[in-house]
Image (cartoon, rainbow, N blue to C red; front, side, top):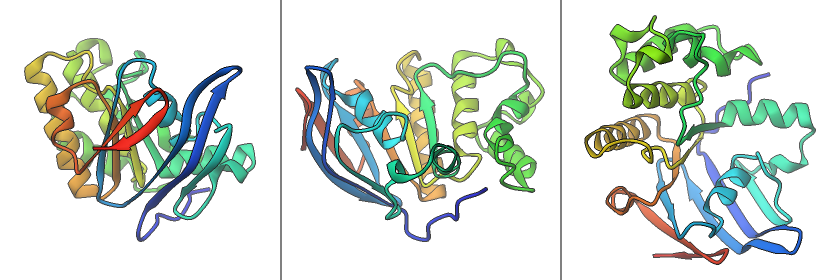
Length: 226
């Protein structure tokens, strides 16, 4: 069942801790966001950036602390409810595009709409998004027929198909050349401004990081705003 889209999307992280056995990955992380805000998370490898992103995305449960998305703690939901909530409220773009090679661009973009049959207008929105990411003439192509940058554009369209309140990107330009990186970055911000979502990106790219509204730095699991 589709979750209602929040009028004013919000995210609140309160005193978040995460450990894997004796290894403490996140220590007392707290921050909050509202719709239309872009945030970049930087830090050295192993500082907990991806772990934090996975917790926000409800893929990983915190050891302690509170996550509230639109005033709901997703970790209090049952597994089926959480899956539906994640599908509706959160979009993901990873360093690897994770497209299904046997399906076309259009079919890949539509995949998140299939599990919960959320929107009768999904195909129309998919066509619109594919045009907006500049791939109208590639709609029937399969991933193997696309460049790396084109595949990442498909991944962005797929992440936005359910109009999520939060768009999470983990090194979305990490495998791309400089020119393609700039193209993908411009596209992310263009769509973020149009959709008014909360854009949260993990990156090592300092030029990309400089474009965000807010900059969070993780060091040894602790978070500071710069």
